Image (cartoon, rainbow, N blue to C red; front, side, top):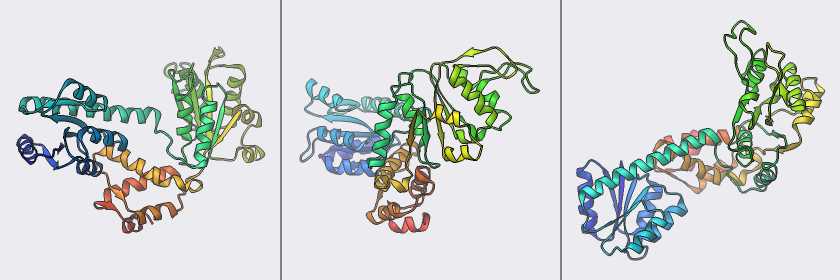
Length: 382
């Protein structure tokens, strides 16, 4: 575990560094607040000890800088001039704890353990949240701001939404955002990838089946519509759904009831349906592959997610976002992207869209040196 000590007194830096190194920690030191912030931006520290009274940038300003730059180390403030009001202000600004000088070894070690436990829990919570809900939508281009505006307007309603756009552009993220911002957010959110389910199983997957309804039906099974009752059902790649399954989905949307495979009993469901596709459904209708009546049921609102090539202004923001995300998940040190390297990333054609960009950022973090250079981009991307 890496620890950073920020203190303008050399004696304090050296003695605390020696004590922590003897306990098996990897320790770096900084002689002032500005240097400490710079080091914490480049390196991943689990715990930071920071003096309060320092020239140029004091401890409270360091806390402000950490919060502004998204540095999520546990910060332990140390001071020989502490009082209750100062301690309270430090905690309000995000400090984990406040310790007065002279420093007690047992208190330091207990505080480090508690701080690292908290950091671990925060990381696990972030990872879990990403798995459940996905990431926030990153970008400030006009194209993505329009999508965000549509989400804000449509999410509180129960209107069905058809989300279109190329593979890897973030259609699933739009669907999750619609659910999170809806009145159904505390209720189930169920995803179905229609392209990943064999056509002969799609009806059972969506509507469920009764025991014995077919050879492998050894017990009753609730389908995705029932599992999502009260909440949201996201039908991803709906353009790949069979015509037979489309007819049953249409019935559920019209009548708000379904019957499991092998049963003639109707079951009422209250589900908001979101759908996504990378296909042109109007062309699929003309080719006889998609029902026009289902299309009109699904497309009350249409949100088109732009390709990354149509929102290149967002690439620097996305690169920075992915660097932070990947480094938080893996423990890799953060790296700066040099200007020439970023220019090459912006100029590249991203046929795989956001998904491809994230993979490229992870590759560059693994293979590059202390910073990501234009040579790295040429060697590992182009």
